[in-house]
Length: 256
Image 1 (tube, rainbow, N blue to C red):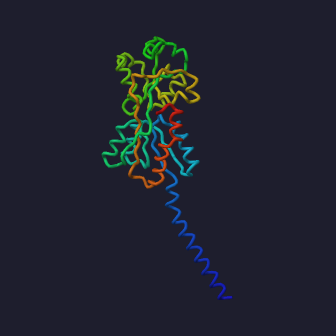
Image 2 (cartoon, helix red, strand yellow):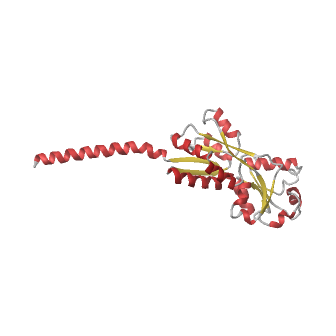
Image 3 (tube, rainbow, N blue to C red):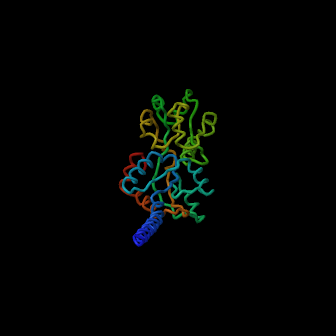
C-alpha cells in the first residue's frame, strides 16, 4: 500500500509539472492572438468589416481604437500600447519611422472628402460652393484641421474656392471626421465635410452629398509599431490589408 501511494504521488507530480509547462508554452502563443490597432476615424466602418473577416479566418482578435489621426499619433508618441497605426495621412507614420518607432510605412487606402447633408434639398444647388452660399445654411461641420487630415483637405478646398475666411462664423469644429458626420446626420448642423465612406452607411444613404474635387485625395498610410510584442500576428493582418478580400471592403466604402 505504501508503495502504491508513492507511485500515485509521483504520477501526480509529473502530471502537474507537465500541465504547468504546457500552460507556460501556451501563454506567449495566446498573446499573439490579439492585436491593438489605432485607426483613423474615417476608416471605422471599413475597419470593423475587415476585422470581423480577418478574425473569422485566423481566430486572431483585432481591437480598434478610433480617433483623429493627430490624436492617435499623440497617444502613440506618449507610449500608448498599440501594435499598428492606420493613419489618414502619410506624414505621421513617416515621422514615427524616422524616429525609429515604427517599421517602414505603407499605403493601405486612398480616400475622398465630401460635403454631406441630411436634407436632400441641400444638393439641389449646382455646386457644393453654391450650396454653402445659401443664406439658409447657418452651420457647417468640419473636422479639426490640425489633427484630422480630412478636415485639413476640406480647408484646402475652401481656401481654393476663396470661401475659408467668409465661412468662419458658420464652421463648427468636430474632433474628427466621424463626429463631423454625426453632427450632420443628426441635423445639429446644416451640412458637414465628411469622408466618402460615410455616404455608403445606412445613415449616409438617407442624405445627399457633393464630391469635393477641389480637396486633395487623402493618402492613408499605416505602420507597424516596433514596441509590439505581437509582430507575427500584426504582420498577418498587414498581409490581409493588401488581400483581395480587404480590397473588396475598401471599394465598398469608397476607398481606392
